[in-house]
Amino acid sequence: MAKRTARQWIINVVLVVTTASLLGASLIPLVGQIFSSNSSPASSPIAEAEKPEAERVKIQMQGYEDILKTEPDNQFALQQLTNLHLRLAELGDLTSLPKVVAPLDRLAALNPKELGYRLQLGRVKAYLKDKEGAIAEYNKILSLAPGNIDALKSLVSIQLADQKPEAALGILDNAIAQADNANKVQPNSVDKPALTLLKADLYLANQQFSSATQIYDQVAAQNPADFRPVLGKALVARAEGKITQAQELFAAAAKIAPAEVRDQVNRLAQENPPAKPVPSPAPPSEQTPSQTPSQTAPAQP
Image (cartoon, rainbow, N blue to C red):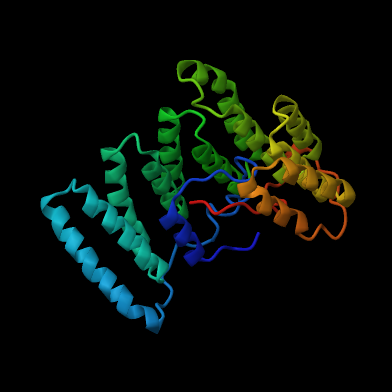
């Protein structure tokens, strides 16, 4: 997977709007995002045209820092300071990123039910190579909201980045096993089909095509109107080099997909297929998690 630029990553962090992917919980945008470079973030030169804005950002930051000296829990100042640090990083000064942690952590503590702060904090820590810190944030989210798709995707991605596909699978199996009990305590709090699809995505990413297809078939049988398992099977077929079958499945997925995602399904169908069929997968112990299908998804935080 091509290395994402720092600017692209920062834009996603600033947006931080959690959205479901086409498969409901795809790993594809996250595999390779966590710990995507081999060195700590470093500043790149700020373009001449952007230097005036960077100076304005720094002046604004100083104002909010002054407010926080006397009002440390002023949430408006904390949020604005977070946004300004991220904007400065987007302009090229990545040394501003570590300074995001403190205000975000305070916002998360002041708003324990607003899980978006914890999610954003986990992503910042992951980018800063604080793997244990990121894992801790995602686990805090799961303690409050078992089955939270975004936290689970991020935990799985960290395991995949560490080349631990079995650990990633264990995280998902545990979440799926607890889903029914969680839904008894709080109905519809955990989207079990989405968790199951995420497990299928993991198999697909690891080229365990038969296992992925089996899960997609199970979800499709339980939810005949759900386009996502059909789309997953299309991706499997294309990865295996079964182009005709893949196109038929893409067409079937587009037919039942909601109007707001139909264009994205059609774009996926138009992607170039592999030059030749993908070889049969090796046993799990011999596989690496670095290979992923050519799937894209709506932007997410």
